[in-house]
Image (cartoon, rainbow, N blue to C red; front, side, top):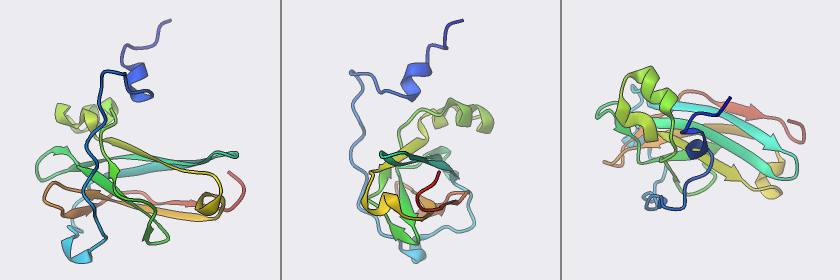
Length: 148
């Protein structure tokens, strides 16, 4: 049985597709937080032996029904990197929410091995909207030190 035609697009961007522009520089400013919105999900994190931690999810702006511009990923309340662009294909999200515009609402981040990836993690994430407001993502991932 053959895999669906879209299978490769969720794992490897084709050569003809350009990556999105870098997201805006964002800091966690609680005054810009729209706390009453549910804006996606921090789906999970997986530690890979000697390779770091892979974190993923999806994010959108429920006010406009479009994917978020970026995601601000926090570990123990501190940003782990600049904002992560939202551009990965998530057809499951588009189907679940009944909105075809949300196909490109996925995001992922790779925290390299060594340094912070080796310790314990308490990940949280916030969607970054075009107007630079923030919205919380559902889900929180806690990971112990050396084990998976």
